[in-house]
Amino acid sequence: MTTSAASRLPEQPHGHTEPTPHHHVKYVMIFTMLVILTAVTFLVSFYRFNNELINVLLALIVATTKASLVAMFFMHLKFEGKLIYALLLVPVALSIMLVFALIPDIFMTDPVRNAHSSSMHLFNPITAFFHGFGK
Image (tube, rainbow, N blue to C red):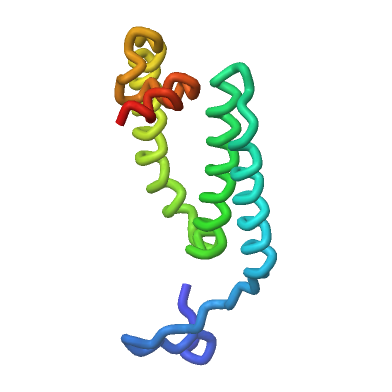
């Protein structure tokens, strides 16, 4: 099957680039959402739920939402191809494995006996408050 020379597209010279379409992003709206989420983070920090898991999950949800907004719109990842998302899978998987690997260390430590421990002050705010006066 042959094509005529007139129907073929001319070959582009090397170094020639075509402009990519510009995506219109409402940066002010994204910034406003980030400010609101920062205010939510600040306000939620004053209230502690009885279950520490709820406190941690709430903090992670707000932080993940803010990080996603920054990555998607300010870093323009929303307009990238699918390869960028495939490359994201390895760091996300390693991060999740790290969190789950540290869970036994957190839950198997006695907060009363180890109140001066490195991470236990995060899970026992009263002990951490009084421990701070000793320094």
